[in-house]
Image (tube, rainbow, N blue to C red; front, side, top):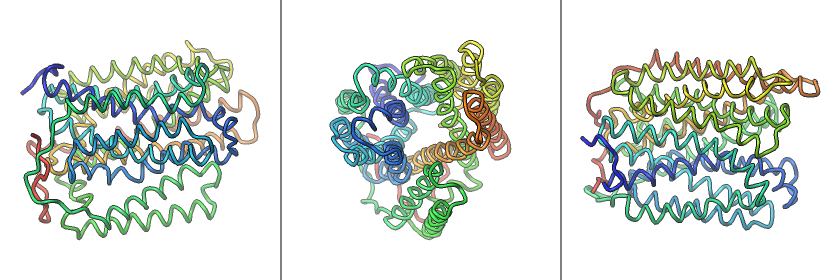
Length: 484
């Protein structure tokens, strides 16, 4: 067993590539938010169309995650990673050079598709290349930190880049990072070696889950424009539900499914628990990021750069929480850390709800809640990644990784849609900083409730971790892509 990740070992050369993946994917979910007004002014977006700079990425990413995760199992982890980088970087370049709203929206959609290939394969490569124990725990801890830092740094970088270099730099900044990652991947990512017959893609399942997830995310992200009770929203969500129900029916009969439903059965209780936790935690975390940014700028009067800098304590807390979890997961176990981290994160968001008021200060309203919430969230990444692949056979690690990332993405979209409604209903027709602060405080309180629900769900659902992988059933083929 490897106890340390050395940069001169194969695992040490692999890890920076995987951390870059997680950082980039999270970064691009948040980096454009502060740049949106400048994008709109320069390219002539209408207010409704401007939202699609964010929504196009979310739709493609959320809709294709399950397929992206399974591709790593079917065609190979290294090819999936490399082609994901190529698509992601090329889309960033195209977005930075866009001359019309349609070009920028299309580039963001393609970028989301690249991210849907990258995100699951990173977790898969950690699972298959690092032995269970300290080495894997450390890798998962860094993987989680990279994702959280990507989201926070995205907000900071978005403000700084927009202020100093213009909105195009927000898109173009990905290009040199991707080029460096591609060079590192050539030497750091082990080649795949096929050991079985060529696998078959579950095309029907892929089409159903991609269309269903895309419509589900679409229905959620448009609730600011179309109310929850509107025919447009209800119709979109109903069609999504029908497509996803069809996906489940197809997967139950498919011999080589895109998602083996047994992964969420009694033999894989940690996997089910991890996905429920990821859904609920992301619902609260992503929404809290959004409302913190709004509170800083619209109530406290911070500019884009200052608002970004205010997220630095959150970054520090995530690192501290993840470092502690890396050391404790072997002794405390996944369940205890997820429950403790969820409750600590809830306490931080609850503190935000009490201090988010007009006339608030950084020391009185931001610093303490940021540190408490971020330490709790940071504690969750190591046990979450471990539980999500616990007892999963090697040939299904991409499947499990895609499932976890889908849960996180769906949770983020769902949480933001619901909590925007909570904030709007609380604010009502009120005007000014006091009304806005009351709405944001209500959203923070709801975020805290989601984290409490995540902790309680884990306490109930999470069973004993299997000591060895549970073999797939229904005639699944052996791992077609083995580690070289």
